[in-house]
Length: 414
Image 1 (cartoon, rainbow, N blue to C red):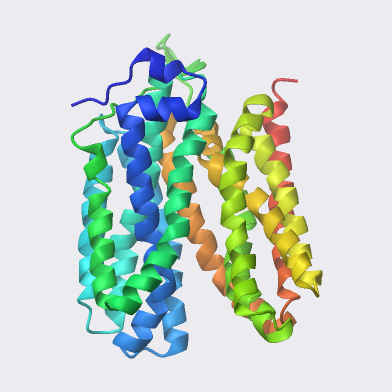
Image 2: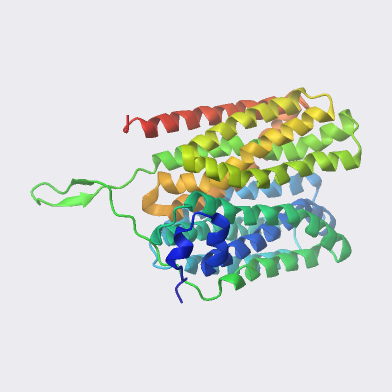
């Protein structure tokens, strides 16, 4: 069964209308919402599971998140595979089932090494597969001539962000009420359950015609399609890793700074942490509309400038008001990268939107692993809050990379 898309749905200028009227886009929205809950519900609980249930030491438990460094390899392989398949959703379904089996194995683990092995193999594949669904959305919109593609992709991405916000709250409650192993089993059910909204729908891969031709073999008199270079995609992913790894540093050390040095109350600390994702959700549709005017790459570049200011605010604030300002600025960075990053990746490598989508989505997990390593070393050398100057410098490097990439993209047209 191929996902239907009436022309009225595909060409509507309203992202909300496009999603509501189109069966596949509705299904993708619901699937990513469940995926967001599944992914984020266990993240704050994994070190607790390793320490309390399996007897791991705290330093060993902290190493668990380094398994995220394998995600780009899985993303590259899955994306390349989907770009050769006729149906975008076939690999996505298989990977979701693999992820469900992985979470069941995690819940049944009896040795410390088992969760590391499961995360490195099964969960890396499952996590990287989310990019395949974004590739399917892009193919669907391209095939049916959507005039609101930036806004639709950003709105679909908002479903995952909403689930990501709710997940830790639900996971903490469920883990405390029922137990950590049942929580992992519930995560397995959600991981497989994200397939239910999609049903039996299929999304055929959309082939992009080669924009230019290159000479064929000497003497053949034939021309072969010119392939788009992957270099701009990899440069963009590098820039995004530099922009995003500061978020891991923030979540690790900003609560400690507020509690131990600023002596902020629990309720106020929760308000500081919680305001960012709410503002991020509000900014996503605004940034998507801005991208229609100036292009998504420029919007992300603007977001990077906000990210630098956010980290400087964290590093220099001696009052909670400054931290609120930092969170508002950081929300702008994440609204730009999370809402439009996959769109830019797909534009930079149109010959393989599956590869582009999966590699970009995997970069989020890669940035988390690198952020943890950099944060641990940086705090030992600089302390809190000066560690946030490191985040500001890294974000600044990401901004420089984006500016050079944007200049290179505009040079041929000038």
